[in-house]
Image (cartoon, rainbow, N blue to C red; front, side):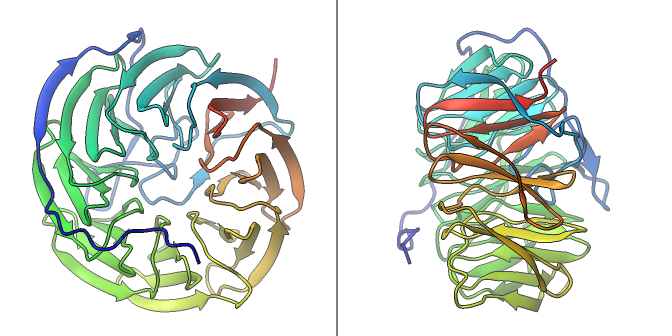
Length: 395
């Protein structure tokens, strides 16, 4: 199995919060509002709806499900040439698309036509997905700097420096923004100022994104531990060994956490314990890098060996599998009765969630490791050929 992650980092995180209002190129002309819901404790969090995709997996629970409606026939509506690989998963809020690039830029595009609204230069390449809430865009880069940017203008609001690269996509709960770093820490900062509320140190880099539910967040570290952390205090309320490095983001549904691991299969954990409920790891399955999608149809997950599977959420009973014949690091996203993802050999697929049959495909110019974003009747995804693709129905 490929070694995804380095050894434990000895350096302590260097914290630097810098306040600035730095104008970036091509200022926007229209506003951006948040898509916020409330947890059981009354905290604002991104929730599922049909008009926005504000975080990596679409909502604070990281389920990978969109409530938008896509046409039966998906047409290519536009492409935007970013001029560098796009492995960052897009966010869609109001009428704008936000996405990071390998060329160290954060872009805002018009959802209708794909025109550039603004481009904000960052210090490092962007792999993480932008999180867009309350008129701010939050994203980390490969230099280890976490950025807060004005969603309307592209002006930098503040920055926060960690000791290693940031691949983990941010999540928001109330006035807190959470993300992990390869310096081995999970950070909780104030959304308005970037001030540190708390940090949780792990034994290895943090690649996955945090999942927010009730008054807690869960994180799966590269030390093979799934942690439950109290949001207000940063206190670790529970943890469980999953036996493997984890690159995938945990998903929460009906009191359970679902996490895909690199060498120990798909696992389901009772979030209240935490305690293990089931493990699905047949010998032939291979390693799991992409995050899973969860819903009433079950759990859909992909292997690096190119197979997309669906199992029951209650008991891991196999329902169907589909051989995409190319490595799948793109996390599946469910829209209606279809699931969408990309492959390393440059293909996009749409499958039926009922039986796994192929209902749509599209060939792009290079590997697709970004995950789809779906909102407002559009499906948006980037590719390593440097293009952002938008699909929908042509008038």
